Length: 204
Image (spheres, rainbow, N blue to C red):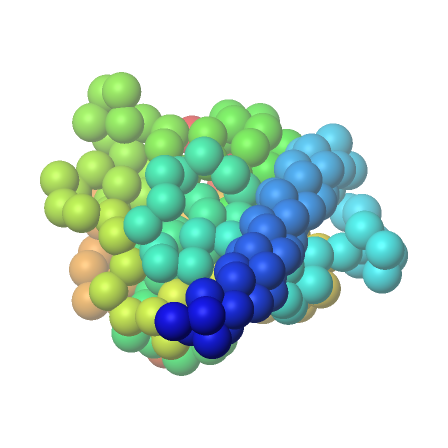
């Protein structure tokens, strides 16, 4: 009995710091992301984040580990958008979705936060991102794909992601032909999506 008690105490002594250690990583990542999204909004052409201010791989994976957290921080909102919009696609598709989100930050007509952008239009039922208004659960179903989405979100917020969309602000699945697309200029396409930007630079 005494041995069990000693082992239990040792486990608790070691497990406590380990559990606490993961929490600060998530908090650090969220704090960094908030600074980076603000910088992107006020300085769209900002260079990549310096090493000390960039979100690390271990930090980003500590955020929303189960994929069930509320959407109230830039990493979670960005990662869920990437996941739900393109979780079945290739990395190129996922990265392009992330680029559209970053391109909208600071652009007239869009909110200046990632979460505000993801939820934009929900009050009128005309959502910018359909997954947010489809009435289904937004919890993650595939852990591995979500980890990939979070890594892409990290690179996007760090400004380490090449914008293959050529400045696009809009996109749609290649299997649909929305009427709104005729009002914009197509910039590029990936395996799953077609990307567009306004003809005169003004978002609608």
